Image (cartoon, rainbow, N blue to C red; front, side):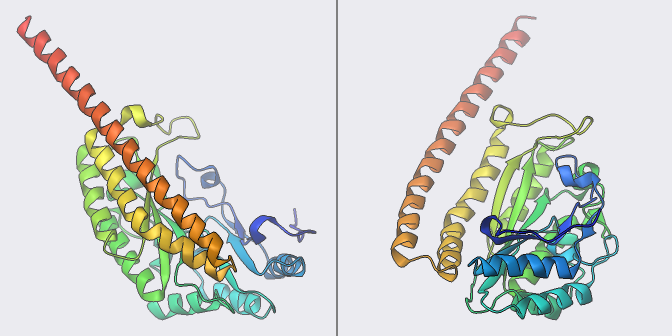
Length: 312
């Protein structure tokens, strides 16, 4: 069925670029649907509708912004560049925020192509923190490939952690701000996987980026079990906390920059920063409480095992 343009302004100026994904991740609804791209005339009409209603900044929605116009997993810089060039001609816009991308798509672009895409996303309001969500999931390509069959293609899963590092460097050179996600509790995860992911996160901490850990939550049968706070081991928690220490430094800068570019007053931006400091304090307290809980649980478990052994 043909997709028709929207009739009214959308929330936050959100404009669809593509639907579906097809990468097969067991924790994502879009995984089973092949990606299809909206025609440029529909996208441009939706942006015009938002602009006419007073929206100065727009947000593209897609499971992989960098795959717009692609055939399968092979990206098309020509198609993406053509669309963004047309979008840029719409008067009165300040910048376009993108939402999701895929590391394997980014790796197919040359540095100058990524810089050109970055340039085309900003008009009147310059932003130093043009962010995009990128799923790492784990440093272990074996684990990622087992739970997200198409995510790494066309690259070798054995090189996944090196690919993530290189993607971080490419995005930094192009002027993007990656917001990475990792998934704790993926089916088949080992302590070695957590240790490797921690090393990768330590590397990302040296770059201009944020890293958000999330818990595995399958959305279809056969995709493993749910993972939550009760399942955390000490290494899980230390990885989780390390990610948030990165975010405590980087996210306030992102907020300040994006709100400034979006026209938010200095007073409101300052209030948000103050509230954010309170959140940081609360998060660190939570980590301390969970750390004690895990230590108590492990100690009690060790004592029970010792008692069973001595009672034989």
